[in-house]
Length: 123
Image 1: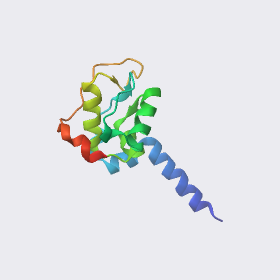
Image 2: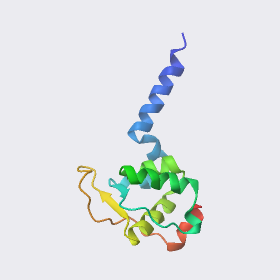
Image 3: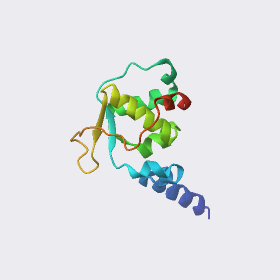
Image 4: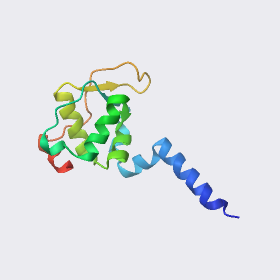
């Protein structure tokens, strides 16, 4: 019987759904329990006009997402995600949601400080 590949795919799906794979890829991202969304679409500088950033921001306009999801879906590293969040917060379009009440926005305060030029390597 060929049930093993089926079970492997189910366990892989469960690990991804629980965020385990994202924690393995970027352990520092798992420390932030907040969800992030966009309150308005930003005017992106030339260096940020990439498919990965557009996909990420597109979903963030519809629903709040955690950093782990950002890393997994966009392929951006922790420093690039941090720099992007700080930039979005700096221009006033980032909306943060605590994990226990995702519909109640709170002031954004990204966890780490990233150099402003950290945005460029993410392209």
